[in-house]
Image (cartoon, rainbow, N blue to C red; front, side):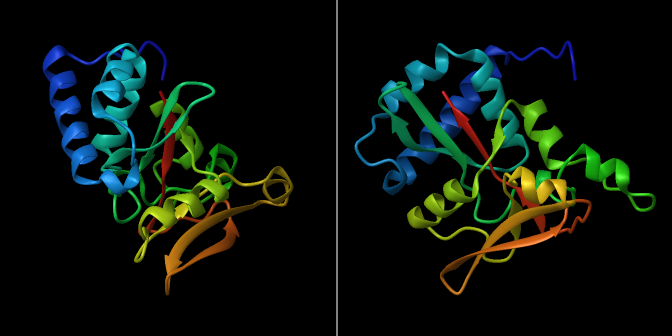
Amino acid sequence: MTNINKELSPEKRDELLNTLKARFEKNMHRHEGLEWAEVQTKLEANTEKLWSLNEMEVTEGEPDVVGHDKKKDEYIFYDCSAESPKGRRSICYDREALESRKKHKPENNAIDMATAMGIELLTEEQYREIQILEKFDKKTSSWVQTPAAIRKLKGAIFCDCRYDTVFVYHNGAESYYASRGFRGVLRV
């Protein structure tokens, strides 16, 4: 995906900022002590990151601020949709897994999609952190960054939340299901 214009039109930018602001104000429990004006100033200074947030939004990830890294002065956005983002489901883990399928290949894979969007998959630790804010993926599951040792053995890991508990599972990286997508993280 080269030569993609990663800048939003002024109208699209304003629409996205309004959506993000409304979500921020509606879900203050996700970012107590943070001020929207400071987040917006940071976003307006980073148009490529704003483009990535729009990609998260159009794939129904509902990105929201979940923290602020004071050392790096970066706001941290996670996908906060109740279930794994609809526009990112039915995909296998990575390109190697996609290419290994001989029949019934999915249209895409999580790693390439995240890279094209300018985001990263959540780690298992980040996935557990987001579940403290509220319970996500009660009916779906999400691929998370897989340790190299597991991936070398053709596996990948995913998480979900059932019975108020985060479960971490494994599957062949080439597997895909209508209810499995991925959640992303973006630092701005």
